[in-house]
Image 1 (cartoon, rainbow, N blue to C red):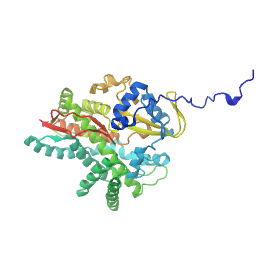
Image 2: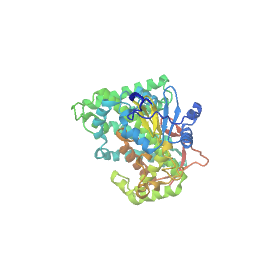
Image 3: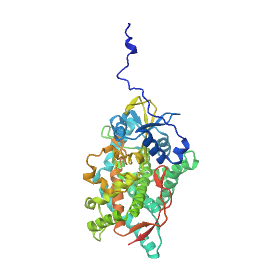
Image 4: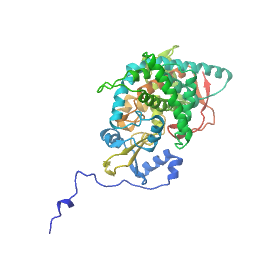
Amino acid sequence: MAQPSPSAQPDPSQPARRLPPAPGGRLRDMVRDPLQFFLNLTAQNGDVVCYRSAPDPAYIVNHPDYVRHVLVDNNRNYTKATSSNQVFDKIVGEGLLTSEGETWRRQRRMMQPAFHHARIEHLDGLIVSAARAMLEGWDRLYESGQPVDIAREMAALTLNITTQALFGVDLGEDARRVGELVNRGVAFLEKPSDPRLVESAEEIKAITRRIIRQRKQDFKDAGDLLSSLILSRDPETGMGMDDEQLRSQVMTLMLAGYETTANALAWTWVLLSQNPEAAGRMTREVRSALGEREPAYPDLENMPYTRLVLNESLRMFPPAWTLGRRAVGEDEIGGWYVAPGTVIAICTYALHRHPAFWDRPEVFDPERFSPENSAGRNKYAYVPFGGGPRQCIGNMFGLMEASLILACIARRYELRLVPGTEVKPQALFVLRPSRDLMMSLQR
């Protein structure tokens, strides 16, 4: 019998063209409730599932080992050229969040010093001062028995902190206008064809350009992030950022930074209201660590349970509820073939509920993040800030900011949802509560 020709032999260097399950399903189900759609899809079909076949195939990847493969081990094969990132790029330009290749690597090298812990820890006073001003307004509401809308309050507070931390100055009337425009721009991210999205973006760009020009004319390092970006130099070329590069990075940090922290805090207060035992424990820890004084960065190490509460909130309701990538070349994930152009979705909301890695995933249990309970857990089962080289550059600042805000509020007030308030997650640009969150203030 004739032997098969060498060309007929399988090439061991090529990935097996074994395709993952593609159970189908209605597109409107994904649009109406993407969180439940991905939870059901992975529970019923496994950890790699094709959920869309056209125009480009799209896989949901829901196992920590596969997440690590995409974000870390083979990250250079996966770009951020997805539709949602293209909308963001349309607003801010080529910023750190959406840039690729050598452009991204250069930007990351130049921006990293701005987020060194030695620099960001000095912003603790700014955070606490902004929280104090907010609480003074709450005192008046408390005296009159009025509730607060915690989602709006956290959004206003974190936007105030973000603009001050970025620009190093009180923007006065510009701060109010920037806040309005950022809120409008984020809302229109869900409607990328709306011409008001571009209008809002152009006005933010104009204000940002003006502030950058003013700061550079009489430059002084004020310890803020913009100062650090102006001073930054590429260690390989010695070049700094021009005004447009600075503008893109500032807008990226402003848009991507404030709303994620605001929603993380809103969800944390919801969970604490629903779990009064955990709320009481956190309050006792804060008061024990601080007494009657306000918190500062060094106090955070004496409030470990507060950090566990924040970690568990980020597990249950990660603001960045999905991460998107697109394959450049062929690959294999979990034995399944990945064709060039395939969109890879990592639904952190579903991953953080994977029953193989999380016991009773729908239960709020901060202790699951204690050192003894975290030992041995796969690192990539928990990725609220992404992972690998493109992990969120501002994660340390965001955690510090949120922890200090929790401490400032907990030492003054207990927040309780108004009875009858039913809260569900809404998967938009970030994972938001589906409604206003009215909370009563208790001493």
